Image (cartoon, rainbow, N blue to C red; front, side, top):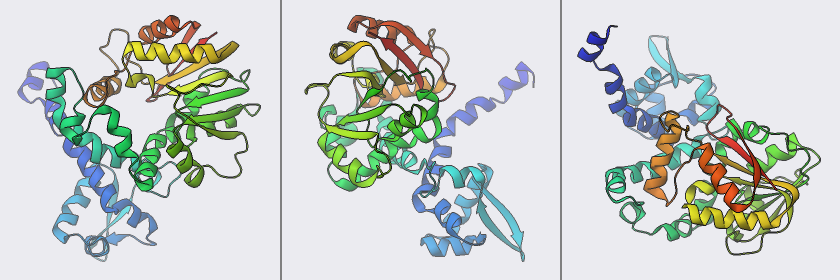
Length: 346
């Protein structure tokens, strides 16, 4: 298509404007249980079967299923003159609750939380601050209390936070050779999903997850199996409580939540607890140095504005933070996945 024809039919812009419809269609199919139902069924199901079992309207089911076929989330075929549906391999692997690589809880977090927050993106950009008060009628400092209101809500949030490691956890952990670090602390390590990747990649290491008491309690109850002897937990608030000495500290998706002064405060505290020759591994979604590439990271940075006081950063900005805290020989590895790795040494 020539440039003139492109201007006469702005396909790219039309696809962008429909982006939220695409994501909400996928979220809705997840929420209603379409992919789980088809995964558990021993045979393809018709629209009427799906509508009946999920207790939704036949007309609504027909439109949703057809849209999912177009999005390549479902497959359709004719059997006895009836259209019947099955999951695609992609949906079975990532959108069903029972899959070990399930992103279901991530999809629900995006649908129920981020989708609401982003209604207030214009306000966040005008004011330069998060919109939690408008979106949820709470302040930033109360967010985690709201998330942790009940064990079920906390478990769901933790499942969301950890689901991404099923697709890029190994990549960020093995971006550097970390085999020389035997005593490792994962600060804010949630349920231990990233710690599992670490002990799998480096069998001589032990990982302790330092997280809030309610998180630790839920992790022990619902996530960590008895066959993970090299993963342990310590209750605490790493901003306010002492951080034990270790060879390596992992900080995944935490630094991006905060302004520079608070980042340096935490990194300095980690530096003081880090053994000589040790290091800190930051795992974040990196912006490109010119800030014009990495579309996903750009969107994540807007999300940080909507939800937190932080932002996504470039490699040089992370190097500056680590250097200010005392770390040297800062190295960056781009994984090609959602998250990248930055290693600073003491």
